[in-house]
Each structure stands twice: as structure tokens, then as C-alpha cells.
Length: 328
Image (cartoon, rainbow, N blue to C red; front, side, top):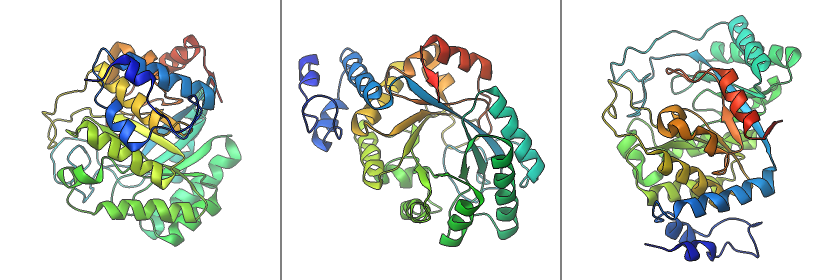
């Protein structure tokens, strides 16, 4: 067990907290902090958030534009053909439906919009629909547009950039050392290669993972440093909400305090990056959702998720206002 004074004195690579983040060795120590010591970690993470992000946050909304039929066997996913979950399945929706959803989310207070599709890779016709929708959304809203459409080729990434996509979302989901426990149908390097392809096309990178898959704290540190090495721009943190029918349906939920510690850890390792809290926060954080900002987050996904419901968007916007934060 480490002590609170040890946490206060952890070397963060330069004077004060305005730094490049914890070293790997220091992060491994921090990850072992007890429940009694976790509030000090949260305090330090909040100091970093305030330094790099002030009291500004962003809000992101998504559309599940293509659902189910996914060939991959990710153990948490309701959309995999390997599991019987009862999740809705449908092919890629049309351009008009995507645009309409973007406008609804923009009016509700979202500053970013992500088009999400299931499956390993889109075909040419599906790419046409996505790119046309993106161009139209740019004409009708001020949203920053992100796509989460699976594996990319260089030509696909270039098309997305030309159509007006700013960010590419592609989660690593978990640490390399744990990945084969979660997915066996593609390799970890496939995901890293897509991130590099998107970066080369000039897209900003949004990549993170899911906490509570059964990984240990060492593996959470490992994931945070993999993302640091890839120099991603935004780190989405999800919390497992076990879906009946999936391989992880009986996986226990993280506690609210452990969930907050996860957020703080990623901020301490990646102090100047955007950290956005996404799916599963309602079940993991419960009544502690307002504390996610003081734990280091500066972004929030609002609205519904892929196959599960989120809170009312106005409830989240009210939480943001009550926390004294400004949506930018």
C-alpha cells in the first residue's frame, strides 16, 4: 500500500503538475493506490484538467448507423454474430437519416457528432453514403464530425478527410496483453494500423477503451501508455455494461470509486489530451456521475449509445451547468 504523501510526492517529470505526465514506473505505483488514497489521485488529476482544459468541456453524440451482423467476436459486444443478444440489426441507414440525427444532437447541445457502424470494414457504396452525409452535415451545422467505421485503408481515410471528417474514432478496447482474452478474430496490430493510417491522412485520433472487462490495473496502465505512444488526440473511456448473451454477461460492474480512479489515472498519464466519458457511465458511476469532471474528464458523450440507452440529454446538460463548466 502507498501513502497519501507518497502520491503527493510522485515525480511527474518536471516541476509542478504542468508536465508530460506520470512515468511508467510512477503510474504503476499510482495504480495500486487504495480506496482511501484515491481521492488524492482525483485531486491531482483535476489540477491537470484545470491547467490544460480550464473549465471547458465538449459534448459528443453518436448515431448507430449500421447495427449488428459484425463478424468480430469481441466479448463485450451486443452486435457480434457470435452472440445472441436480441440487439437490433439493420444495414447502413440512408444519408437523410444520418443528417437528421446530427441536427437533433446539435440542437440538444452536442459539439461533436460521430457516425458509428458495425463490422470490420465498410464497402465502397457504404463509404459513399457516409461521405455524402458528412458533407451535408457541414453545410447545416457547426458540429465537429467524427467517424467510427472499423478498419480503414489509406484511400478510405483520405476520402473521409476530403468529405469533412475531422476525427477518426477507433478504440483499442484494452491492453495488448489482455486483447486476446477479449477478441480473437483480428489482431491488435490491425487496430493500431488503422490509427496510423487515419493519422497519415490528417485526421485527429480518438481512441480509448473499456474499463471493467476483467483487466487488471497493470493492463490499464499499459493501455494508457500505448495511447500515449500513439499520441492520440482524444481518449474515450467506457465502462462495461454487461449485455445478456455476450461472453461477459456475468462480469461484475466496477464500483463508482474504481471508475473515477480509472479516469484519474488516464489524465495523470496523458495530462494534455481530451478525455471523454462514454458508454456505461450510468451503470458504473451511478450517483457519482458529476464527479467524472473533477476526476479529470473534459468531454462527455450525451444521448443514447449503440445498443443501450443513455440519460436524457437535458439531464446531462444540466449536470454540466451545475458543475460550473462551459461547453465549447
